[in-house]
Amino acid sequence: MQTTSLWRNIIRFVFLVLLQGIALEHISLPGNLHWILYPVFVVLLPLQTPAVAVLLASFAAGFCVDLLCGVPGLNAAAATLAGFVRIVYFKVRPSKDVLHDSDLSGTPLPSNMGWGGFLYYSIWILVFFHLAYFFLEAFSFRHFFYTLYLVFGSSLLCVVSLVITVTCFRAGGNKR
Image (cartoon, rainbow, N blue to C red; front, side):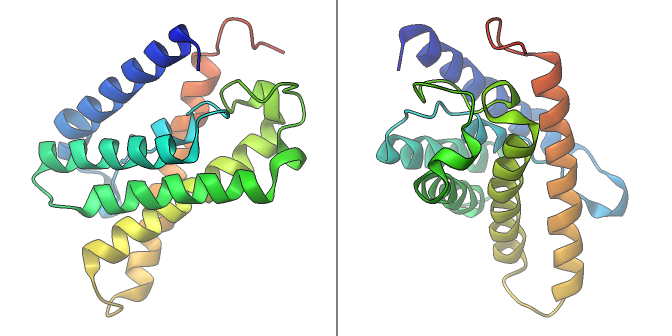
């Protein structure tokens, strides 16, 4: 990972964790949906990041959000699962979605994966994150369909936020 890429990811980590813990955690949305944006950090980690580093960074992001929100372990577990899903995803589908990136060293973005590949990849990670988050939070299947509503509603909100973020803040050299 290059020094500029490392700093970019550290800044992204700090910004998203603080945004989640200080602001987004206290926003009430209609339908009791949660605006959980910090898993975008896991989605946007560079493709060359080693698996152990992905898991540690994912855990650290979740753990920091847990510390800020006073929820012991919930975010850490869900974020670590998201990191694991990311690792498995790129082991199973390495060449099908990373079509435009010749050296696999960049950040997963629509400019090097195409919009279809990027959305497919992002949705997988974010849905698994939200599944873990809401089912661990509920810790039962008593309100199964309501929990699924929270999973898919919050996942949709996160994907839309990710698309807006990626569209507005494209990396300088990655424009198509």
